[in-house]
Length: 307
Figure 1 (tube, one colour):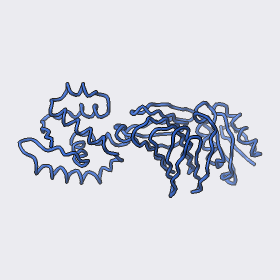
Figure 2 (spheres, rainbow, N blue to C red; figure 1 turned 180 degrees about the horizontal axis):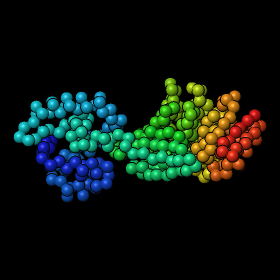
Figure 3 (tube, one colour; figure 1 turned 120 degrees about the vertical axis):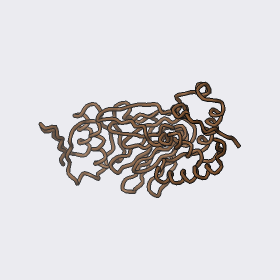
Figure 4 (spheres, rainbow, N blue to C red; figure 1 turned 60 degrees about the horizontal axis):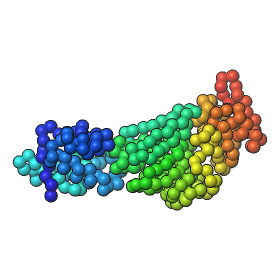
């Protein structure tokens, strides 16, 4: 059993930066004393062996306080025992002001008509489509979980479970490439490489390369993808397969800053096809002509679609 000295000046900033990956092991070793360095290594190993979930501060605080009080009984001569359990690790994190690093404190957002690519701390890459947002924890390598609103394409590095949560469903992978669209009650996942697990409602689906699935009003529909290496929207063209009209319009609005009106009777009709993300007139023709619809753009910038 290992002991860690209870210093009067804990190296909180060093530990936070080290766990976040901005300070190397060698650098940390020069910044703290030998006993602290050994304790930090054990703390990291304890955290790394866990699949951490979102911190529920109210629920965890009372449990952590109970554990701290218990540890105080073992305290002697300014020292306490560091046990390899999650509750102790969590208590140490709170004492060092680090517990917030496990929360979803990092965000990336895109506006109308814009895309954004980024590399996550585990070297996975994400490309966000227009009007989309994701959140992830600072200590992402210990908690590979993302919250997504909108649409994104993921190229995931192999490692521990990588989870994407949306309001319409959840995707779990180990290392793969996949696209997620979650908007206006519609949920679609397409696998471009490897294998993904999709949970939506009471259904669990496993997808291999070239296969996808969509959920709308709790109805499941299989989607077959061509041999594309990535979704078409990344190169400037949005593609749809049997998508409800109201979802199609929300996707159109994410690329063009216009108010769009259409009859409610069109809301649930299905559309398959593509539209341009950079030419509004061409996009509207691509949508309206196959469905025998008309459109008009008013002087105040409103698009009116009619039968």
